Image 1 (spheres, rainbow, N blue to C red):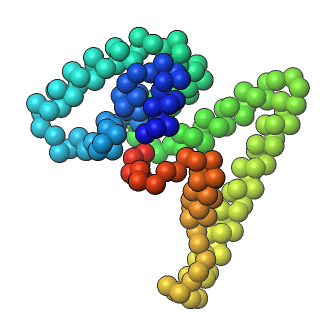
Image 2 (tube, rainbow, N blue to C red; image 1 turned 90 degrees about the horizontal axis):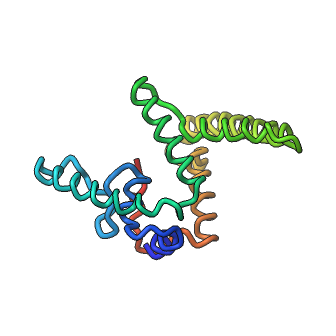
Length: 182
């Protein structure tokens, strides 16, 4: 919560909990984590909506200090999310965002195409690694069963992300780890 407050202060956001709720598109409280709206009564939901409207007006009155890139990415993700909901299909929103960011960077005159193809080769390499890792895990699981020590691609990525987050100080002991789960 200290990091969230520091970033909020730097951007001029006074109500960081509400700002976190806007980014998560779910109710968030530093004391409770993500609030389960399924367990609330209709009256409680109306009160939450009224408080949210007041808090939104307060947060949106200081938008000049919020980084423009964050606003752009947030709006983009909301558009993709809305299209996903309308079409009723599962969409890799981060993948779509990354693909179009790479296409946009390829429009630059100096080394633009290089960066785009570098991105495409990285994605291809990850896809190949994923397929290889999935095959290797299924073979080991069929041979050794529960005694197999081979981890899945997702478990490898999770370990790497956790190590990286600890190295740069993003993981702090005592924080609810399910806070950003969708």
